[in-house]
Image 1 (cartoon, rainbow, N blue to C red):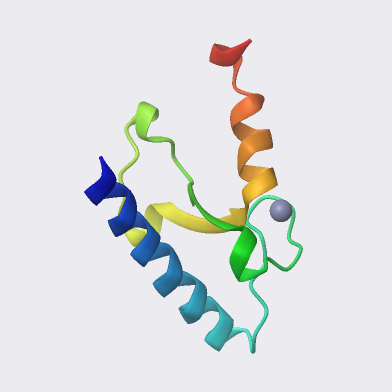
Image 2 (image 1 turned 90 degrees about the vertical axis):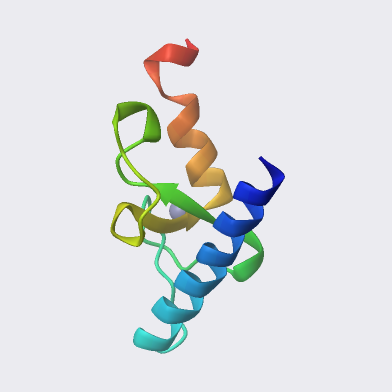
Length: 79
Ligand SMILES: [Zn+2]
């Protein structure tokens, strides 16, 4: 689990840098569209793993830590 998480962290950093380079330093949040600072960046699964999504780059997007939490808090399963 620890290995998988650090691997995802590396993917996040790589994606963040790629997007920042493409958009001249701006990394928009996948959820709210606001700029995401490096310290609050999380990797979001566009299609959740629980719904058959994978961890390939095309299924991943940068979002705020808080937006990520909000999304997961809104899932019916947690209510
Ligand atoms: Zn956001």
